[in-house]
Image (cartoon, rainbow, N blue to C red; front, side):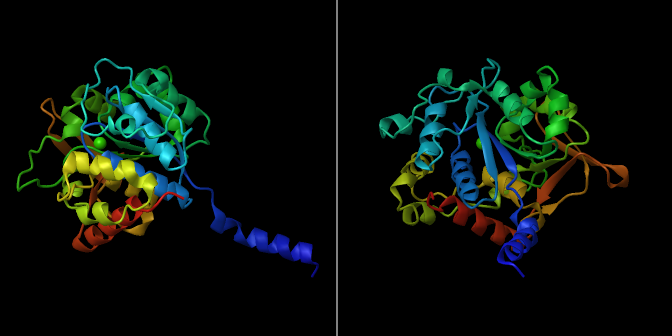
Length: 326
Ligand SMILES: [Ca+2]
């Protein structure tokens, strides 16, 4: 066999293994809690490993420093030009932060300094979605639903979602007991209640949604020792300092937001279990409800965790989150 034909055959045989990494949009309210920062580090790590192609990041709360923080983080991880948008919606929660000012105070390199310099989140979501193949985009949402609701309400927005989004993996609500009770009012729901209720009503019925409830993150406490001992690369300084500023040196912060990212990336690897299919809704007080669909057909499912999955998922999240930038 001629060498050229041989190499062609080898190349063709390798094609199914070299599937293109899935495009992914990360929608975050990176302000109040630091688990968004853990998820952001994990996003860069999995992108470095070729497990996804990050299209952009949208911020769903109002905070003057959040854009600078995320841009400095992306710059440290080698993606200084990753598209970045923030909500312009006056109804979106205005949220202070214990860590977003660190990008400026630590004098870390970045060029987007303020919310005004970033794109409007909805405009960015529309532009990113429109450029991708149909039913290909993983949308990971780990904050309030202001950007999702405004995307659906934008002209043709629901149809754009229906055409382009493969999965919405969202951290919101509570679908298991929290401290023995079933009436937990979860923050991403109550801090933007109308937006979240709108999304549950109007999200297209044929675009699957997987919910990570409050109880999932509680079962995945990040190991604070890993923050203290595993972040020796200077480019990981912002991750370390943000964690310490928010949670201190001895608290194991629950990994609510990383859970939704982990599920979206590897749904077939058994890190989580899934509920039956059905429909999620939230009442006017922000309580979570799930009704199972008859016949197994429904838009929504929520994550579950058995003890073995709990150990595997937590280890994967910690390993990926602390992986040094490429
Ligand atoms: Ca969050």
